[in-house]
Amino acid sequence: MTALIIVDLTPKDKDKLSAYSEMSAETLVEYGGEFLGKGSIEVLHGEPDF
Image (cartoon, rainbow, N blue to C red):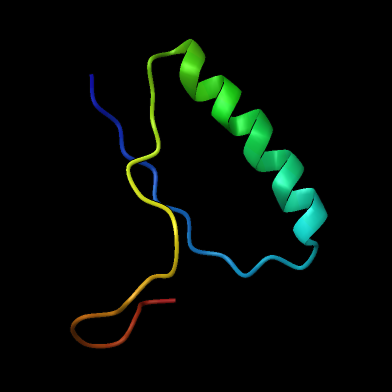
């Protein structure tokens, strides 16, 4: 089964974000997951809903 998770956030503590990213990557590997993209989000049409 395929699942995609999209996260859009503005980090308040970059050190905690770095630690979280390392832990989440380990979880992905265990289940054969991978990051498909990482970086800034660009709205191509309209306004974001949030």
